[in-house]
Image (cartoon, rainbow, N blue to C red; front, side, top):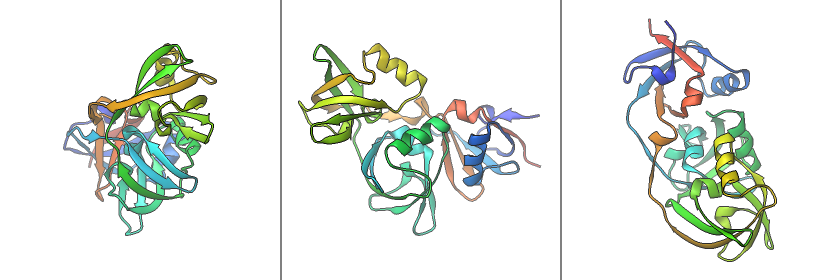
Length: 239
């Protein structure tokens, strides 16, 4: 009987029987996950934090959830989620375990499959306190702040890269439906002006809140999935 990966038992090797969605299936295949692949679901939650990397277009900040979804093929021939890389590690982007929107959003930051990438450092989770159109005060976590692209007097930048008091006009929102609803509720959309007031420490996020399904392939590659992505991978008992 087929079971979605979200319902797979922890610690039991299972065989992938079906991957739903052509684009998603193609990306998974490039990472070595296709019909017949053995996956074992892991049960431990993992603490994550935003990361700063350097790609062909310069430096960029990725939220912890995006860093978990990006697999990097390092120059020493190891394959690791970006989340597990160490400062100074270099390689190329092997693939992304999320849906099309995640790949498109990361591409907007200048990172695509096969691009060279250098892991610079982990960032402590921070909260960005800002004024929206000079009126309403809002608080954005690092993940949300990294998903706002905009223009400033010094050039285009992610909101997590602006200075205190620097004027920032939103030009693009790199987020899915839920996050867009959050931005909408805060009055943030394309064309909105934001002014950073200050940055404060934020509580460390647990991966289980956003990427509850962690598994490992037979060759030891750990992969992180959101539930909606893991539901598209159907597995069965290994024979």
